[in-house]
Length: 225
Image (cartoon, rainbow, N blue to C red):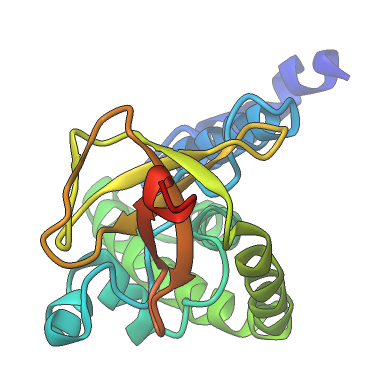
């Protein structure tokens, strides 16, 4: 199999996948492939790169939550599924579009300068089309992940976790919950003026509406101590 890829007849393929603009998506595909290999082996949590699409802040700051990468993804209809899946699909579609477009452009465009200009246009057009196509591809599976999120929430509420960040308060914080596997890293918030330090044991008591945030209290308070 490797002999086929190393054969000199594959030189045009090698040249295209390692040249601009296809090389950008080639790199992204390799990163995605390595990630999924590591994920299948159970060495990382599948949600490790996921963003909080619904806002990682309280309701008063919801407008600010729709900025940055998360806001951009929502704008193009890419919310509701894990970021890793979204990026993998975008990378694959973008690679296919860039590969064939740049390959045929190299056959048609007469000069290197015009070919370079064409490749720049190909990259931006392919990126735009891959994002739009991905938004349509993930629509059927969005409901599935919504159901999985509900089931996961039921599993998380009432469970014990350990603070992973330097502090947990009303504004920020992370806690690790053991689930018998790779574990789950949760975005958590404390109640009132309560504050927890790294290593403190807490219990998840609720999921804040319209966010991926969980409210926690001290384990001792939960046990009535």
